[in-house]
Amino acid sequence: MKIQRIKAIILKEFSRMLKDPAMLFMIIIFPIVLTLAFGFSFGQIGSNGESVYEVTVINGDIEGNFPEWSEHFISNLSKNEALEIHVGDDLETAESDLLEGKISAVIYIPIKFGDAIQSYWQYPLDSSQWENVTVDISYDSGSMIASQLLPSLFQQALFDTIYGENTQEISLPIILGSELVKSDQKTTFDYFAPGLFAFASIFLTMTIAQGITDEKEKGVLKRMYLTPIKSEEIMIGLTIANVTTAIIQTAVVFLMAFIMGYRPEGGILFAFLLVTIFSLSCIGFGLITGALSKNAGMAAGISFIFIIPQMFLGTFVSQGPPTIINKLVPSHYVTDALTSLLLRGAPVSSEAVLLDLGILMIYSIVIFIIGVFAFKKISKDL
Amino acid sequence: MTDFAISVKNLVKIFDNEVTAVDNLNLDVKKGEIYGFLGPNGAGKTTSINIFSGLLQPTSGEVIVGGFDVIKNPEKIKEIIGVCPQEPSLFGYLTGRQNIEFFGNLHCIPKEKIRERTEFLLKKLNFNGEGDRRVKNYSGGMVRRINVAVALINDPDIVFLDEPTVGMDPQSRRAVWEFIQDLKKKNKTVILTTHYIEEAEQLCERVGIIDHGKIIELGNPDELKQKYKAKTLEDVFIKITGRKIREEI
Image (cartoon, rainbow over all chains, first blue to last red):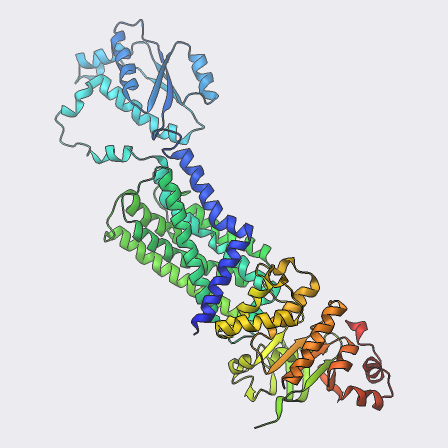
């Protein structure tokens, strides 16, 4: 094993990445553009740190027996900084605005809204005496976030209206902890960021596979084997160059995210370690793809068989509780561990992080070893 | 200690249990000799060179290169040989100089030596400043010259040149011929495969005419021409096989 040969392979790999515009785009420019796009769309920059949803309220009880209750409800809605409440008087116009995406929701307060609350307070323990009404709400079906977030905000405003703002003083055996308030300060970008860091490395699979097939096609891989170089030396050089690339990619994405207002809870150095381990699996997939492919075009196609599941099942694209399918891809474990560290602020020694790390290591090492064997096989068949 | 740089006995190479590329080849190349492999495409020249250079395993037979057995010591052989493949095999995104230096590093040559040797090769092969341009911007002839230079970075004792001057302009070809003759002066052994009859006649001390994986005739170009009462080696080939070499290219 000669350092001079390994160094030559590393420098050759960096030259390949830096001098090929397509490669440079895929490795550096693409993650930067992606981070910026997500930052502007879901982060603090461009939205003053918070998303505001415009809601039109049509008050049908303004001339009812107890109009103060509906006004009180509108007032409580207006107090929420996430909502910009417009009181309208034409339901048709409001629904038209909703269809055009100008507003996020329409609330229709029905006649006898005040009577309903009044009847409740008159007979709080006898529901047969209550005046029952329904507040109709229409959401912007084009916004997944609006339709998920707004019902709880409206529910809270209604709760405050019926019981008063000091409902927290009501003595209950169960209370909601204050941690929820903390998570409200996060932007959507904060939830996406851990997956975004993992995402950056995934495309190494394609760049490595294309590099190998290109060298096979041009005969340079064969020519390298006409010198005393060993395939282990090529492997080590290639791995060091690409792991370094993954670290640089992650640093660039971190930097861009930081500029976009992202502030992780901690564990940044450990996050780099996780991405480094994860990149081994991407390199392994790249070696397997390179071994299976006859040309660079075929390599690009086959690499997507590995890239798409990693992307959709394990990074920011996949939100919500993981399913068994999610757990089949290594990117799930790096994203989950990064979420625990960077978003939840979990310590490195936490069971969840260590479990993710363990499974990620097993996955990465196994895939990398399969990749090394595949590469050795093509070396024999040159 | 043998006087032969390459000694081949009963070499056979069969691909996929079907195609016999090399059929019981016997060959001895003396140290310091320029030996020509002459034959049509598919005759077994490149397969033989791949076996001699340790890249391919023979099906049977014995091949000794520079005193080392190709099966037992392929790594040792790779230290003392230089191979110029038929198709230029270079990194297009690197400059000519960087390509030569890269392969110098794979041979673990000291840095200073690599610089000196690269400079020498670039000058010798008529590169005047173009060595620092990327290979992908080179003309076909320049690519071929760098292809030759890469094979010689380690100052090998035995050089395999597989069609080194195909597609070169006459000036470049002449520069490569002079260079090959210089190698002879330095007592280097050169195995040259070529389709160019003139090239074989001018450079080679002995020519092995190969067809269907077998050496069908061997000798000095002039002796062979005399023996077959032929004007050129092409005529020799026609008289032996009834076919032209170039037709089958």
